[in-house]
Amino acid sequence: MGSRPWIVDDELWALIEPLLPPWPERSPGPRPVPDRLCLQGILFVLYNDIAWQLLPLELGFGSGQTCWRRLDRWQKAGVFDRLHRFLLAELNAAGELDWSRACVDGSHIRAKKGDPTPVRRRSTGGRQGANTT
Image (cartoon, rainbow, N blue to C red; front, side, top):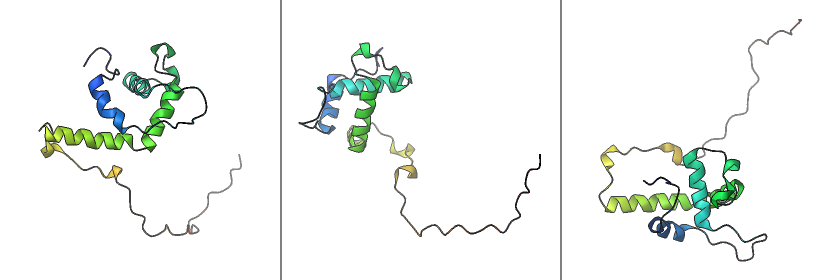
C-alpha cells in the first residue's frame, strides 16, 4: 500500500464505478463533486479517523458534508453490499479466500418479526419513598 492509501487507482475505480447510481440529470445546485473524488474523501476520513468537518478542502475531495452525503446515498443504494459480494466472488475465483476460517455473523441478517411485545404491565413491587431532604 502506498503512502496515500485513500487514493483510488484506475484498476479499482473500474470495478467500483459501474456499481454507483447515476447522478440525477436535473439535480438542483452546483455541479456535483466527481464520484471518484468523493470516494477518496470518504476513504481519507476513514483512514485518518477524523470528523467529517475536518476533511481539508485543499485536497480537492469536496467538503466533509458532501462526502458524507454521497456515502449515505451510496449506502442507501446498496453499493457497498454489491461491491462486497463482487470482491468476495473475485477473491474466491482466484483461490484467495480461506473459507475454513469463515464465520457467520447474524447481525447482518434482518430478524423476523415475531409476536408483538406484550403490553407493559403495572409493577407489583414497592415504590421508592419520597425524598425529604
